[in-house]
Image (cartoon, rainbow, N blue to C red):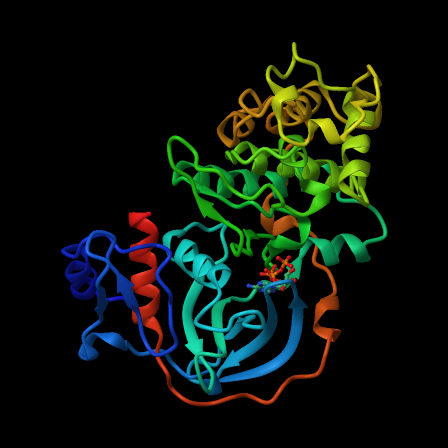
Length: 388
Ligand SMILES: Nc1ncnc2c1ncn2[C@@H]1O[C@H](COP(=O)(O)OP(=O)(O)OP(=O)(O)O)[C@@H](O)[C@H]1O
């Protein structure tokens, strides 16, 4: 989709202003130094994307806040793929940042436990853009919703090891996912787990930049985010990973809060109240004044997860550390005794298969056509992100 020549040409230009508008007609980059808009030369504006009419939509498998996902057949190759329509509702001018970010980050990620972005295709106009991804038969949310008994511990280890490998890969590349939850963990019929939905993912710098605290679905949201911290580190993904591990073991959500206050209360009920000695500086977080912390003193992880051996308990404890700077990392977790103490993780190919409940969601929609390429817009966006 991108061309090295184009990116090299862009490399020689002064840094673009990240606030400059992305327009439907093309990219106008206003230069930070001169303030002069720099039009992209006509011959470089468009690459080539396939039209979505080359895909036969079979059924809808999911709909989230940022897009609708279809199971579809590529009529050229006959392969079954996932088509994620990028939601444009609130965009008056250009592509939504979440969609562009997802494309940019997925393009950087090549790992067997991260969903593969094959290409980007377009509908009648830039109003409809679709990500073509490898199709995964299940997501863990619908599996959990429809299973009669929880995963065995061997299966939980098999799943979580794969998630940890994806997390280590991302975190090593300065990518924070920021929306880890069971519905964003996909599973193929060969038991391979793929982390999906990078619409909220961000590259982080050193030192980390301030970001919006309302990230991460409530049930998986780390206490520092609930208390208004604007510094996001990879440890927010690790907290979410702890919630996922707990959910897989219990077969139900671990901390299903209904509001931010209820969420914090549930965390304190499970782990005991935070204190300056275990989390130095937490009292300075912006939203601390809005909460009255209950003085529950006990950590109840051991009682709640009686099925776990010492390795498993110690892994959970390391993930549910209040202080984000001492919370376990993906690498620490991969080296946890949990994965070597019995029972052993099962081979992914031995994972059970499940009925595909998502295929019953909705009838197919008529395909749209046309051939309006967007690759250049994407390349420039990617370039901007690197420069930011
Ligand atoms: N590659 C894929 N293969 C199969 N199903 C997929 C694929 N990608 C997404 N889905 C399904 O679509 C659902 C929504 O996808 P996704 O999470 O990417 O959208 P979203 O709008 O960003 O959602 P959210 O509201 O959770 O942020 C997933 O939970 C999953 O069921």
